[in-house]
Amino acid sequence: MTAEVIRVVIADDEPLIRAGIRMILNSAPDIEVVAEAANGREAVELARSHAPEVMLLDIQMPVMDGLTALGELRRAAPEVRALILTTFGEKENVLRALGQGGAGFLLKDSAPGELIGAVRAAAAGDAYLSPGATRHVVDQLASGKAAARGEEARRQVAGLSERERGVLALLGEGLSNADAGRRLHMSEATVKTYVSRILAKLGCENRVQAALLARDAGL
Figure 1 (cartoon, rainbow, N blue to C red):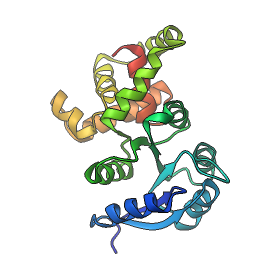
Figure 2 (figure 1 turned 30 degrees about the vertical axis):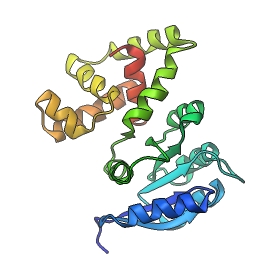
Figure 3 (figure 1 turned 180 degrees about the vertical axis):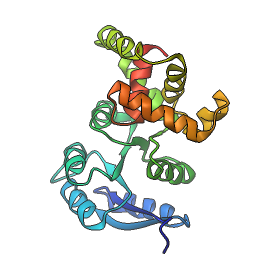
């Protein structure tokens, strides 16, 4: 095994779901599933003992649910990037998870290539925003308190430079650093620098929170 291998822990209470995800991820030469958890408490313990780069975290689990586990994970192993596993029926929980620092989310019925890509993106420090799920969930923000959120978001974004707002807008579309760079005719490294600066200025923990703020601001 080399340092390039991405270590992953799967946390889901359904054995068949875990088995399917494990089979898909272990088929990638640069990914290894090192442990599996059947509930949130086990997930936090395994994060401490196995030090994975990425955890796939289901929301609905016994003993300790995924949202509670995510909060514990932020305190016990903040370096672990948590990808939230979800269904379309859990929109509100997903929004709460992203607000607590989740590295992104994807649907349980995602294609194998999408699952592998999400893990690689999370390990690289990017947030993975499943395109279909992102639009479906973020669009829910259009209802209730939208005006107040939009006003606050626009106030925050006003402090960014024109170029920073351009990069933020592409985060709102779910683009990776590489894709944003191609769109803006910038190097991936330059985009990464802009993203770090944007997160610091906006007080966002990750790209997902910044993407939601971009949508609220109307970018």
